[in-house]
Image (tube, rainbow over all chains, first blue to last red; front, top):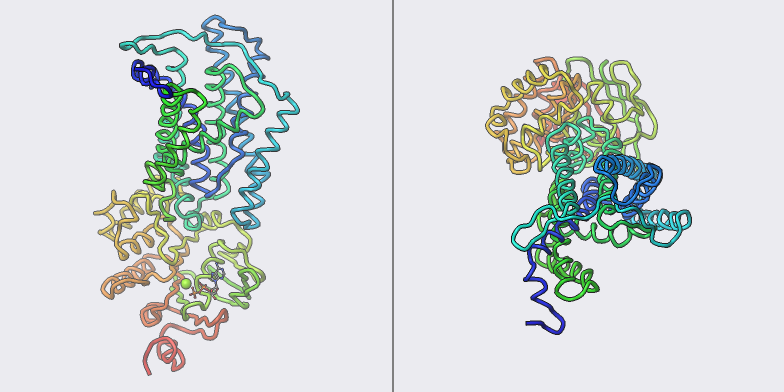
Length: 318
Length: 236
Ligand SMILES: Nc1ncnc2c1ncn2[C@@H]1O[C@H](COP(=O)(O)OP(=O)(O)O)[C@@H](O)[C@H]1O
Ligand SMILES: [Mg+2]
């Protein structure tokens, strides 16, 4: 039964396949979403420049691979080397960029007790400056890169084929998120982050250095965005100066969907968004996937204004 | 003197909230700061803890000028505050809140000993150690706020209105524990609207009125002072 606009067969005939694909797409959203959610949880600031932290990560991967002389589908040892080098370089550069953004733009505004709107405008302006700067430096065209991992089916469940890229993407994202969760909830530094999120003045009274906590969350968000950049490069094999715009918007949507300020919410929101997009693209056409993403957001917020899991890092300020 | 506040002024924007106040706290003392709502008591505490920059004047702690020292470094020097409104981290358990008090410390054994001490002072907290701070009653939260500050093992404990919003029985209990903490060797600067209790427990006290110190003396002197009695003790 083929509808005119909606192709149910395409979706339900291969539901598992589309779900797996959505989860791997959503993993990248989730990693970037964590950066928005960490900063929002602590500072009540939507750091729109975070999308450019991700973008810079993708260009770092391109640069690193080109310096290392990467080619299409190299030997397995080289693949591992390229992935590790790409991960370390992108995480380092994105992390440093995020910390620099905080230092240069936001810290000064915080010192001046600037109103939230000023932060928002600064964030948007900074995002534009960074992305346009890369447009000038790297050109405005799509930049390709070698296919470091040749896509191949790793295993099959029913009629669902799971590829190596999907497994790597989802696994890497889950490991990093688990690590972040442990760091925030089980370590002393993590407790400092939660304290500042819940009550910044009292955190200072307990001896927490607020500036250091803020630098730390920008760093963490940047590291994860760098990792996401590597996974993006592996999955899509290209980037562009404005790659952060749509991806950042999606990741931000994922963060809001799950409950901004909530780490596990970012994971849930990201995965859900990825799956919804793939379903929608399959049912209709890829032109509708963005529409579907935002329809889901609006519907969820109508019924749960704080997102699916609500806010948790900063439960205090309710 | 452990704490010397000298001629301190502090502004919120263009409004001056403290007009040159001077307060000293000697080692081992309980010093009370009493005054009506809006007099500037909390502002004074914020200045001592470093939450607010001061306009003029100095704050010295154990001989060191800490006027412009960062708040977190003051905790390391030995100043810890239980703030007005308690400032419990609602999403953390009782135990995590207490751990926050020891945030600047690394001496695991000492921290464990102080945790036992806090649970000894406040058995209720021990029973509820896994409960989220936000779900405690007002009295329990106040105990947690005081206990948390003790976990820093401060030389100077700042208590901002520990009796606020509590039932009379609980107030009595809190004040008894404050005296006990002091007798165990901790110096205390106590801000209170409950002047009766504060003055009867304090060695010395200051009266703050609209950002100025208008009276000072021993707790007993102020308890029997006619102006203080009229204005703060509700007796004619
Ligand atoms: N954050 C603030 N911004 C502006 N004014 C403030 C602020 N905090 C306190 N004030 C003002 O400073 C004065 C002293 O307040 P406060 O120190 O809280 O008094 P108290 O603790 O004795 O009740 C009051 O007039 C109050 O309105
Ligand atoms: Mg007050």
